[in-house]
Length: 325
Ligand SMILES: NC(=O)C1=CN([C@@H]2O[C@H](COP(=O)(O)OP(=O)(O)OC[C@H]3O[C@@H](n4cnc5c(N)ncnc54)[C@H](O)[C@@H]3O)[C@@H](O)[C@H]2O)C=CC1
Ligand SMILES: O=C(CO)COP(=O)(O)O
Image (tube, rainbow, N blue to C red; front, side, top):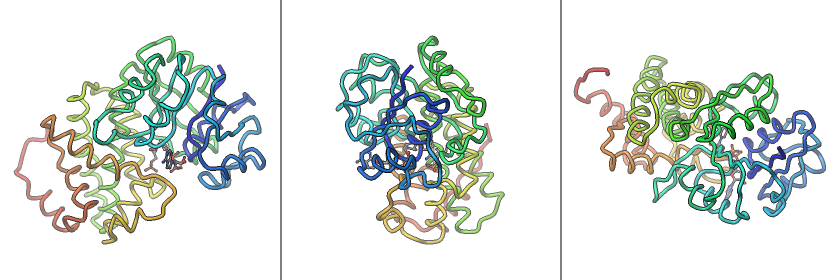
């Protein structure tokens, strides 16, 4: 199975490295001329994944047409750009593995829903889980969920992409796998805020647990399954991202917690903190579905600058007492 990867950011590059682990040819599409040149000549993506020696069997290209001969395509562009890029590709008929974590603005579409609209003949799968790109690229042990409605396709992809240190668990719950990855980014911002404001480890644990309750309510409302949300792509990724400054979303939250405005923290950054884009969309979608998401609402207020950290914390702590379940 010849693999093509769309998106030469940190995660697309790390996944290309996984796919090329035994010298298999992999075609990686990137927007940035310098990224393409650097990968082809120096076998490194210095802009997004500096310091990792890449397999020479990864060939980078700026032309989407070069993906035409691939048997399966991994889509790893930021969530808000996925639809636009997929629409530029020739009509795909094989597996299309979605790896971005987010919800589309305006439409509230999950990545699988956007992809199905612009590439209706492709077999859509989702790869998600606790996966810092730098660790995956270094070959450190990692486990992910690969969700696909077609069990044969899931098995073929797991055989092609699975490695000793890149363990793939199959699922048929595409929606559940997507919701976990999208929502955890917003919750990671909240945990970063607690860290930046010096609120302590108890507060962080409370945000993770109550955030997970929000993720579960929203995921169930959109048709995902509780067991998926409690797995690698939900709780697993939530714990990872809420615990480390390696996370761009957590780091953004740390800055907000220190009183720096979101606009300043986001200005001129080349890398993507998806939670900042997902948060307002998630709030809108949750309100429409009548799902209570107070932590997500709080993150939105902080990103918009409409409330201060201490006010948001007071509001969260003074909500009416309720049963945990
Ligand atoms: N970095 C990581 O550890 C992981 C990232 N992801 C997800 O993968 C997706 C891609 O993230 P990264 O590879 O980390 O990106 P990155 O932050 O390393 O790089 C930014 C990427 O966005 C692209 N980009 C910027 N503006 C664009 C536009 N107008 N149109 C198309 N592409 C544009 C850049 O070309 C670059 O590929 C995100 O949804 C992220 O949440 C998922 C798992 C792990
Ligand atoms: O999705 C990720 C880890 O699973 C990466 O998280 P950040 O985008 O917050 O860095």
